[in-house]
Amino acid sequence: MAEDEGRVWRAARAIAPLRREELPGALWSAGLLFCALCSFYILRPLRDEMGAAGGVDGLPWLFSATFLLMLAAVPVYSWVVARFGRRTIVPLVYRFCALVLLGFVALFALADGPVLVWTGRSFFVWAAVYNLLVVSVFWELMADLWRREQGERLFGLVAAGGSAGALLGPLLTAALVPHLGAPALVLLAGLFLEGGIVCARGLMRSFQTGSKSMSKRPCRWTPGRSAAGRWRRSC
Image (cartoon, rainbow, N blue to C red; front, side, top):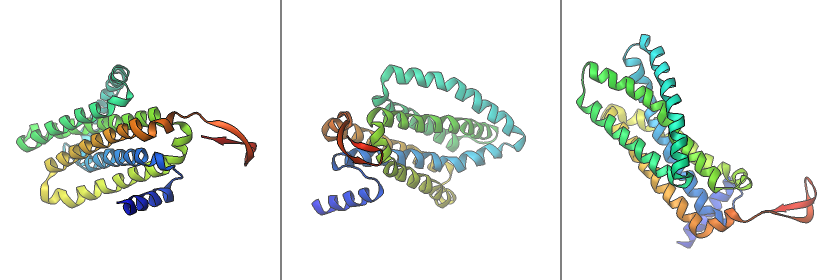
């Protein structure tokens, strides 16, 4: 067990100059972004295909509807963040998005003809708002938990998780959609969101135990040599 933890620590240190007490929070953050982006990139190829399925003449209307829905979603999202707080918003938003995806799964499985076409168009519009919500709440949480100095050091590790998710998502869609169909892929995207909720809760637990004191500890300036001059910042 200790040997495995040592390997994880060395691998994480190779990506970002983190401190040992920051490791759990950084890994949970990377896992959260992995799940969020993997979920969206599973849906993105499906979104493009469904948008084109109704005919290219309808695409301008779909983009207009997307703009209007996002315009309406922003103040609602801001109110929810102000009402519930950044540290509880991720499970709420991700669970809401997962339930909407579950509704689309049922519609794709049961609808046919014109109803299926309009379901695809609705999914095209929803996917854009979905991306806005899922990614925005992640960065809101990161800004609330990590100091700027920590963010600069840990960004590489967290971004690596996001990059892995963005790469895996379309690969899963390409490999599975011929065998399982679009409804199963939408369900899979919802399951990745549930994984994101698990990561968000693990992240909060890590701050309640070891990482919290690290994130709140103030920086101080001590005599020494640095690239900037005669004083060195210690955080």
